[in-house]
Length: 336
Image 1: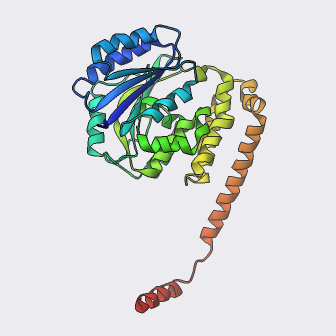
Image 2 (image 1 turned 90 degrees about the vertical axis):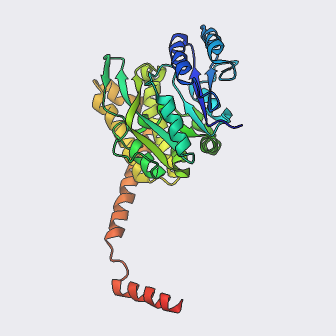
Image 3 (image 1 turned 180 degrees about the vertical axis):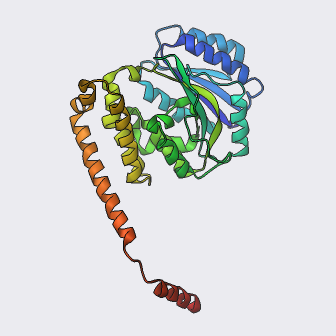
């Protein structure tokens, strides 16, 4: 029997954090074992990750908590995609090994998925904890004016990705519950997305074209900002601005999203980076590290502005005279 929800937890050398996360799930999943299961995707950890998993398997049972250990480290994005591609359940919840989740969240997720089994995507709203300053921003990450029911997928996704935090908002693992079949199709459509830091935005964007989205008003978890490796490596961070985010935006255009959306997301991401630059070297780093990619971004932006201006001009041009249009419709109706 296909289960309603699979929970996948990608991890690498974070045994203490994983222990806490599995302790939370051991409490939350009790009574729901027939509807969902958990699989930890261990990316060839060298610490005591396997010992932690085995300890919690004794509590939850090996049928509820499984472990997949890669023979080598295949990279974070590939490990995440592996869990999504192997899922057999109708929905898949990707969970970070260190993200604090409120009590009762699993029950809410299951209730929502039971009520709306045709959802394309479920987004859990969340707040952010900044490790560098030891401070929580209590504001919700996603817009909170969505109706608390499924809404048009593409519209909702576009509002979320164009929000204050742009791409970062729609690639937070623990906030995202995927419709499994749609995500697996997205992975087939763009296999190279596993090489892109923001590839998850394409997966979620594709899901949004296939079904409605539910975006919660209430916050259910906390995003720990500043703990990931990519956030601490300048080369990776500038690559995300110059290459990854633009590439994701252009791939989203192939799904029917507008070039105006791409332009706004790209410019907002770059603008946020340049706003926080504290020296000239930091300001120039994307141009130094990724010159060709930044040139492509510049060319796209100029072309996009040109396309928008042309579109605005077309909208101002007089359309077919109203009387003629009405007369045509009336005549057509009579002929029918």
